[in-house]
Length: 216
Image (cartoon, rainbow, N blue to C red; front, side):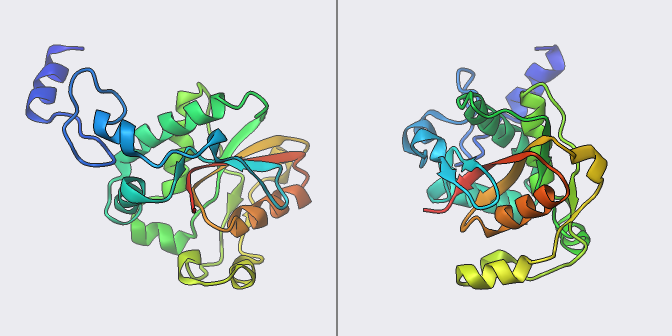
């Protein structure tokens, strides 16, 4: 650590992305209190999917994880992506049967991205790939701006809401490839299922999904 880094850490100490507490020198990703209280999933939160093999998530979408992701998505805390990416990368590495050729993400529509200022799933995928010594690439885009899934109740209504909303950017890129598809939150899995279906129809060989958190 250089002199400038030391000086900055004195005046602007790193904060825990989950509770906002200043981190001590021996605390890395988050504070000790959060280590003991965060809603970790069991067995990487692994669940089978529709149109994709399975999904993993290190956290449940609850407590300080939920509050933190809300700040990340809606209050401009895009810098949280680096810590989130490390957590998700560690979760992926704990599952040795996750094999992939391409890391990608579930995209926002252009309208939603301009409103928010960034695509949170893209930033998460880029950070996760970086911690995996890899790169994330765009495989999908969302030309249709549909209602947010969080506003819609019921699985059937969620499936209908996003049907046809996603398109493959470059079929040649994904032909025969195994894709690790990243999103921030998994609730019903309908969004991941739709994205995986579109990728499979375009020639992808296998899709595995990963998210920071999943609903309980």
